[in-house]
Length: 118
Image (cartoon, rainbow, N blue to C red; front, top):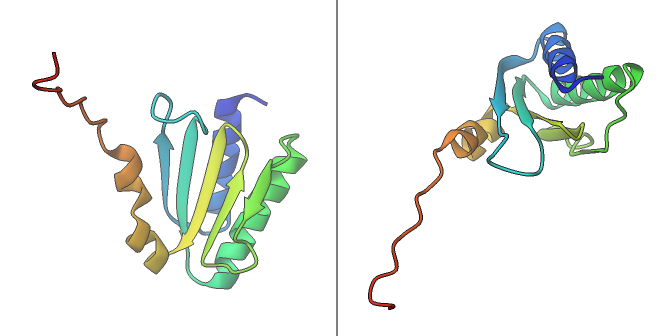
């Protein structure tokens, strides 16, 4: 499965599961961890769990077995690692606290000049 197809499968699944505020962040060139981070909110711990489990299931069904999942048991923040696509599903309060969109959308800092070291 192509990376763009996987990204679209995840977005469609999130939409089908009524996830809120779905954001796709292209992080190529910012990290070697993944190409896309997809963020979405669930309305409760059960909703977060169901969304993450369904994303993992549908991805596996499409031939992309997740490398791992984290946080599904707790349901405040679940992560599904699909290698080129990493999915974060969070309750709104957790998402507001960590503000991953802001973190990954920030421009890279310019290197600081070293003065007096010649």
